[in-house]
Amino acid sequence: MKRFLVVFTCFFMWACSQKASKQESSSYWHYQPQNYNAQTDYNAKQIVNGYQDLLKGFAYRDTLKMKESSIGLAKLTDSLSKLILSTDKNIQKNWENSLQNIGAELQGVFVSNAENNSKELKMSMNMTGIQILDLLCNIGYKESSIYIFNTKDEQFEDGLIWFGNQKMSSNPYEMQVGKEIQASSILQELK
Image (cartoon, rainbow, N blue to C red; front, side, top):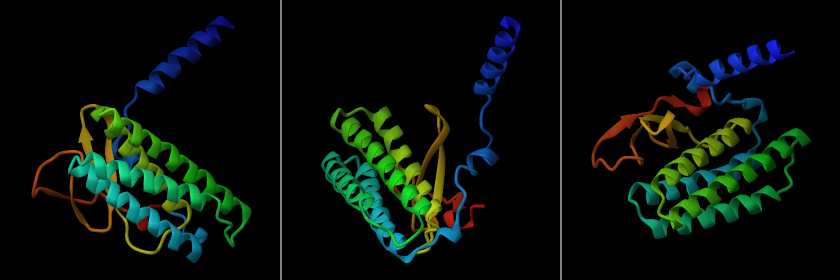
């Protein structure tokens, strides 16, 4: 039994030490157009707009804007999680769970912004974007094209992610005026 445990522990440690390649990091999400529903699309558009406001506050390091945006977006996700959708139960459950996950990440944004903790704020912003992208993929979002950006960061192994409605974007994690990067993928094209 001890031999099995030693082998398992070694395998586990090896697996945890492996870094994700660029190919793997682009497969976090799988777009599911079969789950499209006009009602979820309309409501998700409000979340996308709220996230863009939050991202603007983050890019300009405007703590008041971030506080207001994170509170407003958290209230919106809380309200939308109680919405009864005209879809099947699985989509309804995914909708509710995704909105709760987004709300939890927004609490991290709010707290790290209030504590002026830049590393935690970066992580919370990254995770908020990831959770919103997960929601958009799960509901087959079609309202507008969503461009996904990824940048390397020494503090975060998988880099940092954000999204927007344009093919080019300034990196909100770095304050470099005028420097734009191209999207690494488009939400609606993820397979």
